[in-house]
Length: 381
Image (cartoon, rainbow, N blue to C red; front, side, top):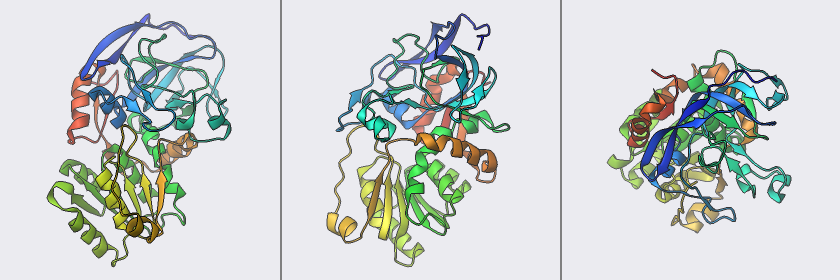
């Protein structure tokens, strides 16, 4: 595939150290064989990115693959873009040929495919030589533009590209990665039809679980969060009960849950905040035989005090740990969004789209609790 004319440079928002971000310009050259270049249309700010910005750079803590993210780094792994050049023929994850101008979502992670974990088909975060955009791929590493907070970005060989359905807005397509992290809900025995779900933490990831639970037929979705603004958005996307953590005690919230479930407890709890206290509360909220999905404790170390007898063994509880998205979930996620994003109120999840030059403001908004998902788009007004 012949490479079209590229600009000689591209701008990117670079985190240069804890609490410091600046716009830098990098050379842009035709991609090497096996590589590609995307023109970025939109890239989200994730909770992991906020932690990197704050200086919380230890990831996979306590595992054999613990690592520390180094600066400078161009964050952004929730990215939708247009293919503009490639070093050879490119295909999407379904094996269909891609051409310049095709709109794609870039898979956030590139496992090696060769280590013992990859051969055993374990999740990508078990890979011994994992590369992931906006995290392990630093801006000091050629070809530098390896995160979505940029005008253009390079695509590594072995990356997965997912074609965006026609008519799906860029800002919605860029939600494919956090929506693909909701695969824990699909692992609940018996499914969610008619189920009662309790989501603890209504940031973007928690909100994606609300959307997915509704799409899977949950009858009632209760939510809890520290921020009233996020609870209001949660109501608009289908939450039936919203509990403000600062205005209620854990016992009061559990009483509300018992009242809502005739004393049984919820079928599924989703802990999306990373709070050890929320993990304990989620377990206590479960019915006998219920399932807790822990999806919020990715960065740092989180030690929870729980009653193993009352809340796990004698409750016959099931705990599912989710450390990231399922690569196989991108395609079905994009299909779901294309078919139902309006019906499910998914547009409510993207509250702000800002240009690269306002990255500092975007980071402040994303951390404030006043916003839901904040995205950076080079062409945003």
